[in-house]
Image 1 (cartoon, rainbow, N blue to C red):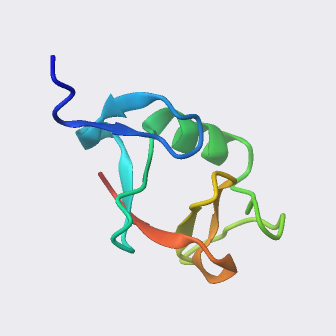
Image 2 (image 1 turned 120 degrees about the horizontal axis):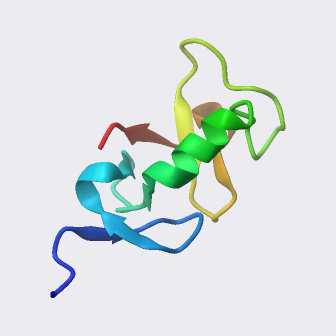
Image 3 (image 1 turned 45 degrees about the vertical axis):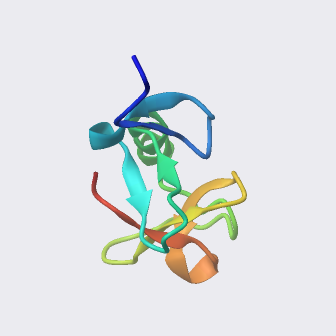
Length: 82
């Protein structure tokens, strides 16, 4: 296979299917895999930048330096669903 339709997760650096990943809205082409997103939700949705929970309607952001997920207001790029 040529790897078409596959993306690299910025957190764990594994390659996965594009349709199962979430993409940053900022145009950087950064993605986070479904496994890393599920792990983040299971551990309480803590922001990697400020260490507080992302709650309710707060925008989830992908921190592009490989830290993980957190608030979009803490410097993360807003993410899209698949």
